[in-house]
Amino acid sequence: MNTNPIIALDLSSKAEVVNFLQQFNEPLFVKVGMELYYQEGPEIIKVIKEMGHDIFLDLKLHDIPNTVKSAMKGLAKLGVNLVNVHAAGGSAMMKAAMEGLVEGTPEGQERPALIAVTQLTSTTEEQMQQEQNIQTSLDASVLNYAILANSAGLDGVVCSVLEAKVIAEACGDEFFKVTPGIRLAGGEAHDQKRVATPQFAKSEGSTQIVVGRAITKAENPVSAYATVNQLWGGNQ
Ligand SMILES: O=C(O)c1cc(=O)[nH]c(=O)n1[C@@H]1O[C@H](COP(=O)(O)O)[C@@H](O)[C@H]1O
Image 1 (cartoon, rainbow, N blue to C red):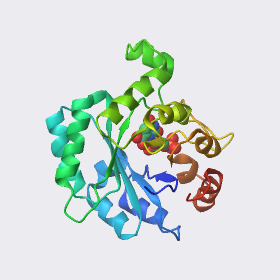
Image 2 (cartoon, protein in one colour):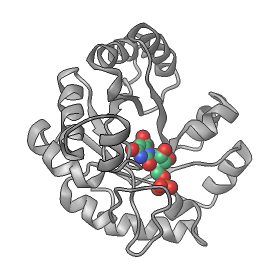
Image 3 (spheres, rainbow, N blue to C red):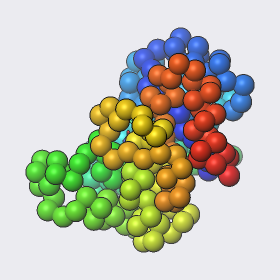
Image 4 (tube, rainbow, N blue to C red):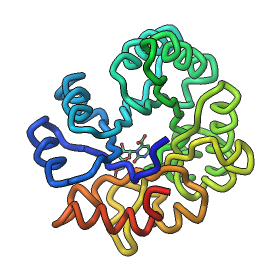
C-alpha cells in the first residue's frame, strides 16, 4: 500500500477539499472521514479520485455482522484503497466486513485493504479502564484487538505509534499499523492523547501515518506536508 503520509481531509465541503488539494502538484494519499462523507456523500470520492489521489475512507463501521457486510459491499464499489471498522465489533463482524468487501469489489478492481480501529488515539488508559471497564493496560487492550483483527483475516489496524512495535512483534511487519495522533515536535495535541512525531512513528514500525490538523491548519499546508514527509522518510 501507498506509504505517503495520509492527509486527513477533515473539511466539510467539496469546495474546501478542491481548494485544498489544488495547492499540491503531486498525487497524495488522503483520508475522507465522517465529517466530509456525511456532507458530500459518494460524490466526493469520485471527485478526489479524478484528481489522481489514493483514498482511505474512514467510516469506522461498527454494527451487527450482516449490516456491516452489506455496507462494505457498497463501499467496495467506490474504488477506494483503504476502509475500516471498529475491532470492538468483534471477530464475526470483522470477518463479515471482509466478506462484504471481497463480494462487492468489481472484477478487475483491487479489493480495498481493511483495517480495524483498536483503541482511539483520543483515549487514555484511565478512561479505558473507567468508562469501558476494561481492566488491563491500554497496550494490552490494543494488542488484544490487533490479534483479533489479524485472526479475522484483516490487513491491519489503526493504533497509536506507542503500540506499533508490540503489534509488529505479534502480527508481523506486513500487518498494517496505521497511526494517527501525529504531531510535529512541540505541536498542540488538541483532543489527541497518544501522540508522536513522524520520526518516532517511523522508528517504531508504523506502516502509514495519518496527519490532519498539523497539515490542514498550517499556514502553508504544502510546506507542512513536505516537512512531515521528510521526517517520515519520504515514500519508502
Ligand atoms: O481511524 C482513524 O483515522 C483515527 C483513529 C484514531 O484512533 N484516531 C484518529 O485520530 N483517527 C483519525 O485521524 C485523524 C487525526 O487528525 P489530527 O488529530 O488532526 O491529525 C482524524 O481524522 C481522526 O478521525
